[in-house]
Amino acid sequence: MKLDTSGFETSMPTIGFGSSNDMLDGFSTVPSFDLPRTTDFDGFQKEAVQMVKPARGTTTLAFIFKEGVMVAADSRASMGGYISSQSVKKIIEINPYMLGTMAGGAADCQFWHRNLGIKCRLHELANKRRISVSGASKLLANMLYSYRGMGLSVGTMIAGWDETGPGLYYVDNEGGRLKGDRFSVGSGSPYAYGVLDSGYKFDMSVEEASELARRSIYHATFRDGASGGVASVYHVGPNGWKKLSGDDVGELHYHYYPVPPAIAEQVMEEAAAE
Amino acid sequence: MSIFEYNGSAVVAMVGKNCFAIASDRRLGVQLQTIATDFQRISKIHDRVFIALSGLATDVQTLYQRLVFRHKLYQLREERDMKPETFASLVSAILYEKRFGPYLCQPVIAGLGEDEKPFICTMDSIGAKELAKDFVVSGTASESLYGACEAMYKPDMEAEELFETISQALLSSVDRDCLSGWGGHVYVVTPTEIKERILKGRMD
Picture 1 (spheres, chains in turn cyan, brown):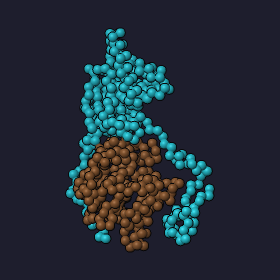
Picture 2: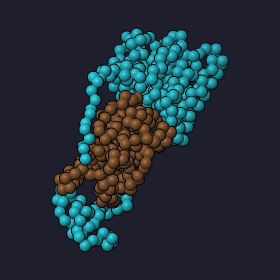
Picture 3: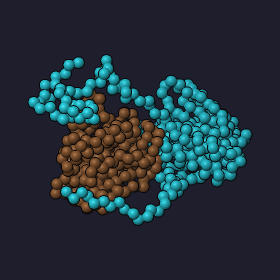
Picture 4: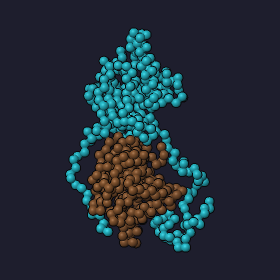
């Protein structure tokens, strides 16, 4: 490719101009641009910039222990790199003894959880007894399966207490439904799993479990850019759910890792007197 | 997310009365994951010229090393420090040399020139200089920074007030950006001293 470099030619060769190798610092004879050695000149930079689309920006977790189910989540909503809100309610109260968590599209999660709440109430009225956690999660999973492939984004956990005791199910927009003891969903979930899995014991008190949940969310907000805001912790017991705490993670950081008071030293330098 | 948002950054410089302040965030990330919270983005070229680079972290480090090298050569030849305006032109030329395979970073340059007059400018990744009399911003949080600086800036602030203003502008802007923050780093430079301070910010 022959470019027109007539605009650069001068009578005296300038030091270092156009030379890619600063180290030589010699007199370059023909000023020119470095051109990348590639056959696809227009496309090569675009290829270098292809990035993977990030996963659902949030951190939610839930686990079953001796005293019931602990559910926790952060409160950040992000649109790409922009933080659109630091105060989103990601734990949705389906009814007084069942909770759902929100990960993925906010509108999708809010609508389908409310819809699930309606279906649960109708079941109660029709059958004169509360619906089980297993039944409720099945209703949601079947609904989402029928919309498979249409672009819904829902990664939710249904946590509750029914006749068989505590129940926890993971349901997603593909129609998948998993029963389990510990789940974490969202872009911050790997970090939350690390703390949750290493600190988990079935025989925990409510305080220990809530501290574990809070700590897991805090560590996820520290490492994950798309999680942050307030760490909310809920407990589901035999009498229904109860919100235990909602701590701002900015303050939690300095609570867990306080900054030692600094000695009053200041960097003072004389500016060059010229 | 574009390549400029791969590591995440926020940089701002402000002009005061015979002084300037330059501030950056401290996060180094790989897309959404935070790797480090003590990444150095602001570098001293000499006592009266500072450069802060936002954008891809590897280019930030390499470009800084190249600029230090060129300035040292200048000092040996001319037996004096570079003026901030001259340094800005040098950076612009070095960036344009790589026009068809650019350094993926956007510098913010701040310095004290003749008669203690503060000088600030910013550039895009291929060297287009943008001089300003009040403040310049760069990085993933640049839109929030523009808004915060516009609201908080007053001309002819003294060093202490300038420090407060730039710190508040930086912290409030990075709190609206997923990819920058995790602390702040501020230099306030007057003709007699350089004050470096670390800001305590939200770590989420």
